[in-house]
Image (cartoon, rainbow, N blue to C red; front, side):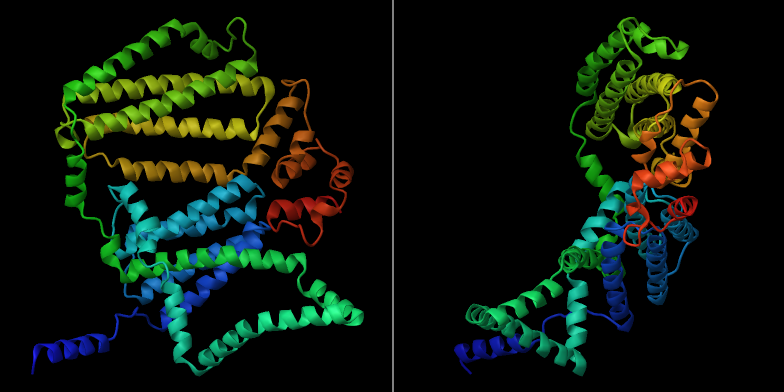
Length: 500
């Protein structure tokens, strides 16, 4: 047989080999359908309407589906994985107890990230929080789902193609695709030819293509990629474990490869910055420390004094974090071999930032005592306290390399985030301001601000007598608690009951 014939045969054999198709089972098909429904409901009644009880049920159902899917795949849950699952269930309840939109959005993001990390932790058999947490989150949220983003679509199409009903459904879809433009052309010509036909078809179109239908189509367009992404997180973690796995030694080698700047160069570059910080702090000592004795520097109002403190805190904290990252990941001698001098620089930067945070918190306390709480002031204080704890962890890390920074950061953030969610912050703000007014600390109480907050604040104000039920009814003018706009959570339902 000559060479040309042989090459033709080899090409035919190669072409005859089936391409590698995606592997799936019945449980994957069920999961694909469940995730699609979750995505549609998520967009339809949660993102658009913030229906609290349904959000709780949706995320509790998502967590349950995740557990069943992982268990049915032969995977086991360590105590860490069980704890993560319990946290996901607990934070699903938040939607039912508060009407705060900011907390609603943050909790949604927290639960999605938590679900992705649960799959990463279970499939990689983790018994503790990952040391390279940032890498783990990047893999679980980006690299793993994007490695096969169309898995849900491929499984659904393949499963539908193998069934008789699926084949019929596909034929119907193709027929509709063909007939829609043809029907539109004929309908347009008939409308032009006859006024009665034009009126009839116009009424039909106005009935079918309402604003609600258009909104639903828009929601479906957003739900579709979200469904693909959510399913890819679940499916790819189970079937593409190699993508999600972190090579500990490889990660350490990569970090070591970034260490390219001699330590002395680093010290020389950072020292002027430290000197500048020290000079700045001492030159403004009276300005910064005025907050500790609850007095204002000359020429400042409470508002200006507090705003400048926050602005300085934000930028100095950000600059110090950047400096710490550069020092610890670019200095040639770092990691386990970190020299004493580098540790001292890290501690000085952290201590300096802690002093500024303490000063800013003192300013905030003074500002709140004079003008009361707002959402921005509460959230800013929460963030400052969180930053302070993280800088304390950085200091501890300098003296104990084995200190599990990632684990304690996750524990601290989860605890503080729980305080933010379960304390119903708007109700807390309203209760504090009303109590300060009733105690005589504040001369005025701005009740209008409660209407700009969630139902948590309005309910608290009504219960404490700061707002009258008839005034609230008049302000909302009935629209707030109709069937289309009701927020199904305890605060909104209790407020609606108070206004009957």
